[in-house]
Image (cartoon, rainbow, N blue to C red; front, side, top):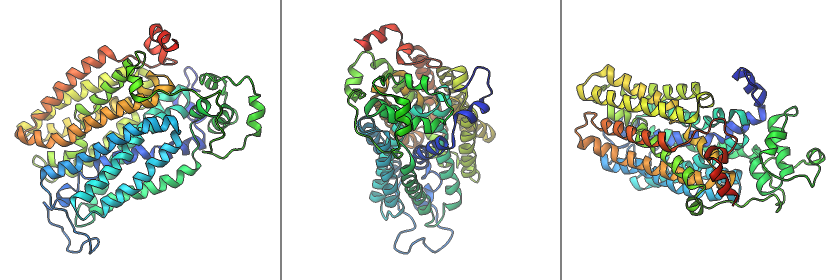
Length: 499
């Protein structure tokens, strides 16, 4: 693990084996798909809805219509219904990954990532397009619950914040891919290729998951601690010291010789040995977690951060930036959207180590302050017709999001509660996140139109940033440098958990 004063890049080279890198990249394709589906309709909106004529006469497939006629309200429903599917996936994923494991849940999730785009790309009508979006939403909702949990459990302990940012980095990568494809393929029936690409990514991930093992931490707590240590050894390398990390599992392995067992075990990656009842730990359900006084403060904290992530307005840019800016920048809106997505990816990647250096809470508060200020500038820029101010404010808005509200929320659940309640807490958090995403995606175009389409809606986002930021500053604890949930919340909660 990282030593005091050691350069970050040297620490990462030592702690990240080729096998671990493969595992992280494969599982992170789930969040990538989330970002892709979130942005896939942004650029081709006018072509899909028949508002713009095709520049060529031939359709992509003679049996499929080049476009699907729909008005603004209908398109808002097609866009936002994805978030309702995400809500279902988020609620189901927590119990599934606790009971059956992280790996099986990710495999089931990926099947939906394959089926959803089939309906989307071949849809001849609004109803089938919406149905495909729901299936893709179920997969996305599940992915952003289970993947951050898995990554947190396999990441080197001293770089959990850095590796936790991988979720948001891949979300942004998916957004960039969708926006770039949209920029080049938003014409004729070619928009269907954009939607089909997601199915190809899902199929690749489904095959690649065959070489991904179950989370060692979950195995240690539910099935076999010796096999868990064997998998952890493969992830960390032969020279890594595992004692401290294994000790943190709080699993009693004194009855068996772990070293001997490790040399004899040869179970394939992803297999589930027979369950060890002595090692199994009782998981906490969604509703029982909220009712328990030692978990409720953590659930409120994570829900507050997740709601803030959406109600500060990021998806107004991700999902509607082309139509939002087209009146002000008619020939540059689509290109600016690609630049915005690329900036979001770059800033998120560069700021990934920041939460391990200055703290999770500090990053979140800096992010909220930046987004609130940028919202005011964006409202002025659009309202007064100042193109350069609107463009700069949009870029600052997205950059501020990338500093904290983008990556940090996905790692909080695993640090605010014990492993027995992580799935339940993450489900509460992502359910709130998806509901907030639905509110923004469904009502942003409606409210923006009702308020005169002059950018005034960003004053609303600025006000929400102020209120929600104040609540987070008061309620949410700092988790940086804390060894576990008991240390984060203090001795009182620790005693309650024991009792």
